[in-house]
Amino acid sequence: MTASNPTPLTSDDDWWRTAVVYQVYVRSFADSNGDGVGDLRGVRERLPYLRDLGVDALWLTPFYTSPMVDGGYDVADYRDVDPMFGTLTDFDAMITDAHALGLRIIVDLVPNHTSSAHPWFTAALAAAPGSPERARYLFAEGRGAHGELPPNDWESIFGGPAWTRVPDGQWYLHLFDPAQPDLNWRHPEVRAEFEDVLRFWLDRGVDGFRIDVAHGMIKAEGLPDVGFSSMTTGRRQSELLGKGRLPYFDQDEVHEIYRAWRPILDSYPGGRMAVAEAWAETPQRLARYIGPDELHQAFSFDFLDATWSADSFRKVIDTALVEATIVGAPTTWVLSNHDKQRHVTRYGDGEVGLRRARAASLLMLALPGCAYLYQGEELGLPEVLDLPDELRQDPSFLRTGESRDGCRVPIPWSGELAPYGFGPEGGEPSWLPAPATWAALSVAAQSGVPGSTLELYRTALGIRHSHPALGPDAGEVNWLETTGPGVLAFRRAVGEAELTCVVNLSDAEVLIDGYGRPVAASADLTEQGVGHVLPVDAAAWFDRR
Ligand code: BGC
Ligand code: MG
Image 1 (tube, protein in one colour):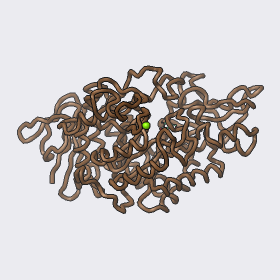
Image 2 (image 1 turned 90 degrees about the vertical axis):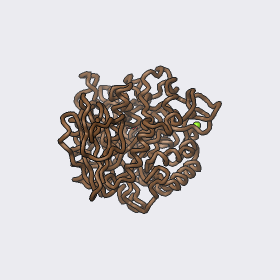
Image 3 (image 1 turned 180 degrees about the vertical axis):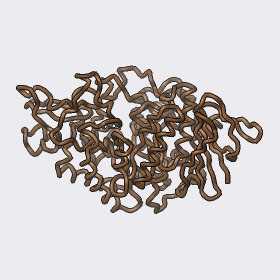
Image 4 (image 1 turned 45 degrees about the vertical axis):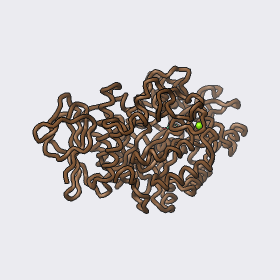
């Protein structure tokens, strides 16, 4: 199917198994009203672009009422839209249009913590220690003779202690910013509230949820110490994310929550799904979040973290495929998101980084399962590394010096001057400035230009939709060992139809012969005899039917 003939919204309950989902960081996607901040009307206006790009669904980052301490991951009202982003009416209009265009909508659910501006937390602060209001959060007495030390040694992911003391002497837990108090998920009211929030958005027609910090809601009984911290050893506890066990993450009891949510999702028609942002010690523990009685997908961050080498990719791909097969879930690939340095920059930045990023995208889009794209990767945007400190807004920047703002710079749509059509003519400057070099990267500048990153994505997504070997009945990954070290090659086949993906991660060009006709390539191929030469840091798809 081509971009102008998108996948129809079928009654296919399994749509998410092979979908390409485009992550919209709402604040930085498109600004409809000229206040310098992206909004829901902006998303709505740009839906045709996403339909033409060839994605199946959008994941929208939080647009709920929020003081925006952590870019909206600090929610003060789970059932309303922040005025900065629009209104519920705008949301309804957006989802109606999206569905009419064949695009599904996934919203972000932030259950681990609320904003400190949430009415529950303001009530908790106003109430006394031991009150029912405090029981919905994790308040505790401090240690030390006068309770002057935090209850344990837990560290915030954003740096510093995970506890803040309130005037009456108690401490409350916040695994992220102090403005993001952690909820007590052993409290029945908390569970009931979020089940109701799920229904609220399901009733409004959402097709799924991305579950924020899905591994975090349950903390080990007794709140035991980790045993080390940056204070004692200089090693941050967060270094164990995805590698080790922490008493505040990936506790077995968290799965009860998802087993309660799944029947709610299943009670709605049309294949409503949920994807976990979960970090677990091993791929095996990660797989426990997915399957028929829990969540539908969990991001494979090992894929995102793979280094630029054939061995590294091969290992994470094989492991993810095995784990997904065991639990009957699709693999869920991702290369970039709003928390990670953009993959162009991770792979070396500049020209090399862009070449590799384009090749990695072809690799990802040829794999079975679901793929998540992050807005702007289809333009080959790099991380913006030189944002002035005073403009950075990520709360972790102040506490650790690490900032995620560089991947959150507004999207360049058109024109020669920043913010490149992000907002209407004459509007406010965008909330983060776009670099002076981005005119050439805009959607308008790349559209229709053969070889541009945008056209590469359009081509690849079009083939992904139309080629039987990449479709819902598509075949497994069959590795081809013939291309030599540093080269990844795999074939997927259905009946007579075959698609072979070759990625050259070695330091020499390789001759590809016998896989069929090249239909997509991240760099120019040259013909040699009956074969083709695939340059270094490049990938190509070959079609044989
Ligand atoms: C989100 C982050 C956010 C954090 C706290 C995540 O993992 O993706 O952007 O800062 O959760 O909500
Ligand atoms: Mg706006």
